Length: 259
Image: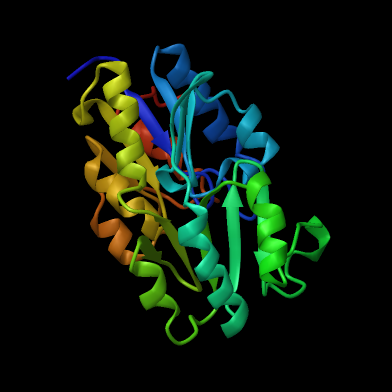
């Protein structure tokens, strides 16, 4: 095992709750890791176009965005997988026909389908007809999309015929086949000449399960569902309790007085 490791952090529910700033304790802890020579990667389900300014400006050494569809190390792009238009277009037609709530996610931004007023204040583009999709598609190469609310009849079968679906509470993420957070981790570690034993991962959601299982040490947040906690090697406090910094101290990566 290498003395220098790569730490992978989910954002929502792990470092931030409800778009609130990262706690002072967690911020100091992560900066201390970097001072020790470790590398830090954001590993989030959010596509690049939906990352908060704080996440982009935090100083991560790289980003695994879109649940593993878009991977960067420093200023180098290691991977960018998108869903082909000939795969996505008939699905968009089905969502429009069945009234399925959906957000298409890309590095260029987000596009809404049947999302009502939920995101009205964000002034995002909306698809109401296939002509809208055809106009927007060239400018928004879609890395993944999310389905919201109860899935309408036939939707899941149509989606999973060519794409991977990760169910969550109240929504589902849909990715190109083979994409996931652990696949992004594998790519980052290979690029760095390290192995999975040299990785530590923190997460709280269903899409973090494979990441926690793959990491040398997987840490689940106290606010994670039981099935996510079961996939981890260690369970820490909640995001509100600065569980990340607490785990780093308890696991011996930081001295007790850090943070």
